Image (cartoon, rainbow, N blue to C red; front, side):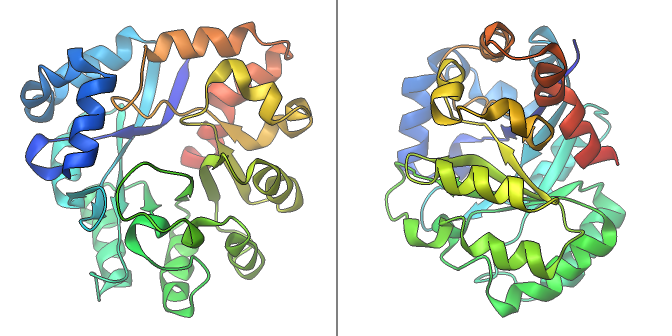
Length: 274
C-alpha cells in the first residue's frame, strides 16, 4: 500500500531553537548524529522515506523564531527541488511577512509550493483574524491546502490559546472551498472539537501526526465514521520509532481496509492532487 506522509520537517541544527534541537536529539539520536548530512543531501531523505513505504511526503518550513525555529520557505523549496516525492509547504508568519499574498503566489508559481503551514500558537495570532483573509482567499483560488498546528507543545513561549480549533470554524464557513487540515487533531485538549469540526465542514480534515497510533480509537471511538477526513503524518524526524512501525500499527487497528487506505493515502491524495 502506498503511503502519503502529510507531515515531515526539514531540520537544520543552526535553524532550530534549543528546545527543539534538544528534543530532536533525545527522540531520534540516530538521525541527529547525521543531521548535517540529512539537511544537505535530499537524496538521503528520499531514500529513507522510500524505505519506510512513503510515496510522497509534505516537507514543512517553519518561521517561528520566538518559539521553535526559523526555517525559511526558500530553504525548503531549494531542498525539495528536483525531488518528485518531496512536496514543499510554505511557512507564512503574519507578524513577520507583510507581503503574504504576493509571497504565496510567487512561491507557488516559481517554487513549487503545495500548501501553507500555519503555527498560531508559535507565531501568536488567531486563525480567524481579518488580516489573514486575503491570504486564505488566494490559497482557495490556487486550490492549495492550509495546515494548522492544533495541539499542545513543549516549546518554550508557546501560547496555546491561539490554536484552539474553534477559531477554524469561522475560516471554514467563510472559505468553503479552502482545504483546511488540523495537524495533531487537537492533541491533549481538543480531540472532540477537531472531530466535530471535521464532521461538520466538508472542507476540514484531521492530521493524526504526533498521536500514538495504537491510541487512535481511544481518542476517536467513531473514527470509522470519519474515514474520509483523516490523513496520516509522521512528524519525521521529530518522532520516536519509525514511520513504517506507525503505519503497521494503523493497519492492525480494527478498521475496514478502505478506511486504512483512505487514512494512509487516498484522503491526502485528494487534498494534494485534487
